Length: 405
View 1 (tube, helix red, strand yellow):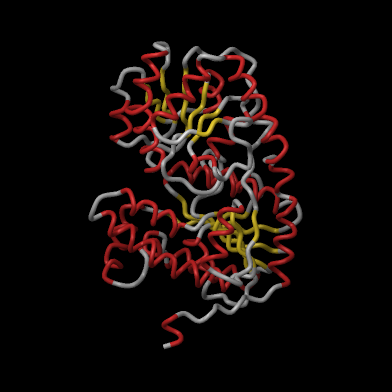
View 2: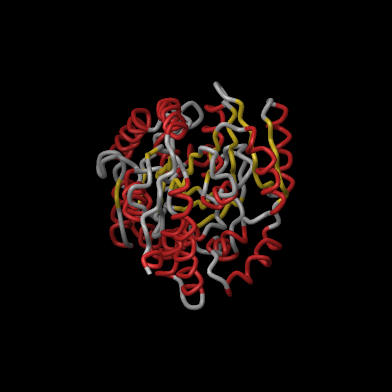
């Protein structure tokens, strides 16, 4: 089968959340199918990644992406009923590539709503719309915690993007979410639209338990540090949690590991016991050195790769409800659940004060990902997803209030 795969970014190397998922999906699809990759190319590094994929035999079609220019083009959409997302990721050049390739393809797989929009001119093409999570719900969460005027912008984006997501959901012959929770949110928003769950996994052969002793008191967070939920969670931990932890455990120190730290994140490096690394070649080096991994996110959806990777490394994890709600483990057995400063302080201190319990938690966390988050096992469901997408017809959307009028 010839599959058209649309991705916001060049899906290689698997060094961030969306690329981890898209790379593993494409690698699986390629075993039995001809995959045509269409993606935005974000800078010189992704241009090199495109060439590397081609050298592996992948067919890759890319269009350069310039964020500042795209954002400038999107701003006038504030005066319309369209979402900013359709402007930030709109491209006549990429649409032309899709229009050229789509007629010769048997099925399309779009990863994210912004990429699904490029398939709307091709209603007869069977498609999988991989929402993974509803971005409209993410913007709604942002609106609840950010001050005006950002709260207004985010609330508007949540509303307008939901309209696009509705159109895509009913135009697709299968819709994919990454957790049962995300599927419930989707099903409530778009009743009768088809949906299924394809969980994210972790590369167990790449992330595996360390053979060294951890540095005493070393606490680590990994993630892209220009992403607001990551920056917000690290600021919360560094300012509201770490000082109290250091009062009880003076050796405690916090490493914020991830590329593109914002100015606000860099400023955290001036606090006692905090280090901001910026880009590192391999996050496993830092996870191996750590005694505890934390995921103190106050805004999050879906499955957090940072949590799965730490669990796979045999690290005890302390995570918030938003960060761990997509992980189908048992709090207290596979990881520690902590919301708010006092609960997080208590959880971290309990592990720093009891290395045996920390080691036990790390072992059970590794067992969890071996059992439930092995990519090879999870992607067996992908073949069924493709078959269902080929057999179904799009579901007519139910009438809205405007339709009834």
